[in-house]
Each structure stands twice: as structure tokens, then as C-alpha cells.
Amino acid sequence: MKELIPFLFRRNRKPMDGKLREKLSVFLFCLFFSVIMWGLIKLSHEYDVTYKYRIQPTGMPENMVLVSQPDSVLSVSIRGSGVELYRRLFSSRMRNLPLSLEGGRVKFSNTHSVLAIRASSLRPQLVADLPAGAIITGLEPDTLRFIFKPSYSKLIPVLPQLKLQFVSQYQLYDSVQLIPDSVMIMGMREIVDTIRQVYTEQKNFRGLNEDVTARLSLIVPESYPPVRLMSDSITVKLKVEKFTEAQILLPVRLEAGEHEISYRLFPENVKVTCRVSLRDYDKLDASLFSAVVYYQDIHDNPNTRIPVEIVNKPDFVRIIRIDPDKIEYLIMQ
Image (tube, rainbow, N blue to C red):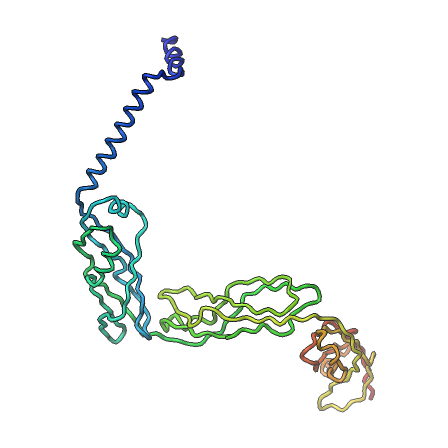
């Protein structure tokens, strides 16, 4: 027994001789031919099968929102034959069937409206989609119903989602401009009233050294029933300029309100460093700025230095630092 197993193993490893190979080839050909003939015979017979279609409503009634779709799947019973019939039957993907709601019968009530469409009206559309020669023998359900409520709309702001990366010394000259900066949203009032803003798609701008104008898609807030936006995108404008630093020497004054006091400040002037675009550099002038300290700060903190504040400045500059940012004082009796 121990010698028999190795013998059979060695024998099976030997190359197949020509006569055995020829017999095997004939057997496989006959088997393949038999399977093909059996399949053709089977496919030539007529069978009753059922297809399912997912209903996709279009052409919604004006000023209405679809809140429920009880009949979202249509089962179509057909009789037919052929390869396509079975290929569709065993496919896991449910086919979509567009359905226009225009012209449907609407029944109104105090809280909602019901639109009904007879499934038989879809026969021409179904016949065009079914395999050639297939006959429709039944539709389930026989009536498709859709429930609507009045649509509510309001204007809400748009918030951009931007990441900006500038070339050295370049910055935004002005705030990001959105056109339009708000959008009309429509849907069920209970849902629309909970939505405070709409966001744009996320967008990265790199290497900015000039003005940019781009179109950004709007993200529809997720909800059920879904809401609708009157516009699907907005325009964003970025005004980019080259900036430089400038320094201005400003006198400091004490803001005492109704109090009449004599005082001395140490130092009397502060150096303000600001950032300004090259286009506005020539507009810089100390008369456009005001640096003050407040008597109230002296009253609240009699033993400390008081902070300097810039209360007036042109819109085209950005304050970087004040040197010194706190100064000493002397109140004279």
C-alpha cells in the first residue's frame, strides 16, 4: 500500500498521450455544445417574470414640495423569452423610471395634497425599455400616489469655504466679495426655518498675487424632504494687492471727557507701524490717525502705565503695532 500511492502519483505526473488528449477534447466539445443547445432551447420558451423600477418623479407642481412618496417602486410583470429577459432579471441593479407629475389628479386637504397617476399611463414608456417582444401582463400598484405640502421660501446668507495662500507681501485688499451674497431656499417651512446659512464648496487658492474671480457651487443642506435652492452657484471675487510696512509718528492726547485736568504724558509721541498697499502708500498722512489714552484708565489703575489706543485710522491700513503701547502720565494739580 505504501508503494502504490507514490506509483499512482508518479503516473499522473506523466504527460498525457495523444489518444487520451484527443478523446478528452471531443468530450469537452460535446459537453459545451450540449450546454449551448440546452440554453437555446430554454431561452426559446416563454416565461413570466417581474421587473422592478424605482420611480423618479419630475415636473413637481409649482409652489409645492414632495413630502412623501408611498409608491416609490413599480413592479412590472411581463411574459417573454430571450437572453436579455434573464440578464435583466438576475441583475442586482434596479432601473430608474422617470415620471412626470404634470397633469396628475390632485386632491387637496387642509394639511396636504395627494397627486395620483395611473400606472397604466406608463405602458408606452415601459414597452420602450423592456426587451424586444416582451408583453406587459400586470402593474403593481395600479395607481402611484405622491403627497405634497405648500412650499415655503426665504432668503438666507451664503458663507464661503475658502483657504487662501498668498505670495510673500501680497494680501487681500478688501473683504471677499460674493455675488450674490444670499440665496433663496425653498421647502417645508418646518425645515427651512431651521436653516441659517448655505455654504459654498471648499476651494483652495494658492500662490495669490493678482485678483481672482471664480464660480463656486452651493452645497444644498441635507434634509428630508429635501430643500431646493434657486441658484446652484455664486461668483466669488478676491481683490489682491501687494502690501508694505510704513511707520508714522503720532502725538498722544488724554481723553478726559467732562473732566478738566492738566497733565503730561511720557512719551508724548508713539510710533505706529501699519501695513498698507502700494497703491495707497502715497495717501498716508499722520492727520488721518488719532492716538489717545483715557482718564478712566488712570482712575481705575493709578499705579500703572496706561494703554495707548488708535481711535481713528484710514480704512486702507492695518495696524501692526504701537511703540510703546503703554505710556506714563503725570496729573498736575
